[in-house]
Amino acid sequence: MPLGEFELISRYFNRRSSRGDVVLGVGDDAALLQVPPGKLLVAATDTLVEGRHFLSGTAPEAIGHQALAVNLSDMAAMGAEPAWALMSLSTPVADERWLEGFAEGLYSLAERYDVALVGGDTVRGPLVVTIEVLGFVEPGLALRRDGACPGDALYVSGWPGEAAAGLEILKSAQSSSAADASLSEPQRGLVHRFLHPEPRVALGRALRGRATSAMDVSDGLLGDLAKLCAASQCGARVDLDRLPVSPALLAAAGQQRAESLLLQGGDDYELLFTLPPDRADELESVLGDTCPVHRLGTIEPDRGLRGARHGVEEKLPGAGFDHFA
Ligand SMILES: [Mg+2]
Image 1: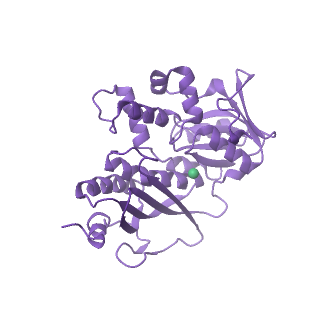
Image 2: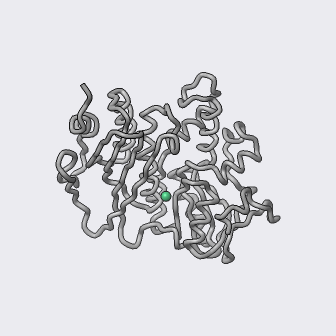
Image 3: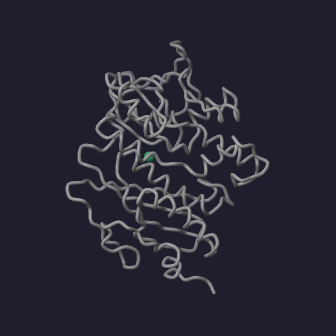
């Protein structure tokens, strides 16, 4: 007998949370939530569509993780404390094993960041997951895209490009699992980075009151940097000799391809941020305690993005696309 919507929600998506600010969670028409006095409510939503954001046949646990992780990444990019999530799930069949795996991926990440799922809706249809995350930040401390100033040092967290390399490996291996026996250990690491992005919540927290601007990298580093620069009405120089190419990415793709995956690949969910030049060195070591951070270049007054290698101007890959206009 197929599972009804009510039963499905209450069986898989009604785990108790320890948060005291959830006055009423899953089960009524809407949730009742207590926003801490003096804080701003921060809201973000993101949708994952099968075949577009994840490959068909992806493990349900990875889909559950990813759907929440991309939203937590937006919270991190705002310097917000994530608190609550709402989910809308469209699925072709109410397959209990799939739902169990999906809920596991979702909740194990949610519990790690103390996020309570406070509402859910399910519908029969193509596989699509929409999650909305709500969080808080002190007024005046939110990280925004529009605060970068000429002279600011430009940074990125972690190892961008690894997720895009992982996706390429999955596609060519015709497999949707990091456990594929034909993959080498470093290849599996890259696949894991694609399937299980880790939101940089701790870094976002540490950037509050320190960074002049921030955003998360979801659509490719250069494209997202262009958005940050447009919002801040400035441009940037990217030092190509400082790109943080990880050993695993280099081994999988070679130097040239690695650089283009790093600059243009998507799905990294790293943070791109700017620091005032006179405090950059000092802050770099503080921020480095949360996760690796890499200096990438400098914000400049002239609009557009430019590349340089050891001080000599060099064309950026993909120059000519509309995000360079
Ligand atoms: Mg974002």
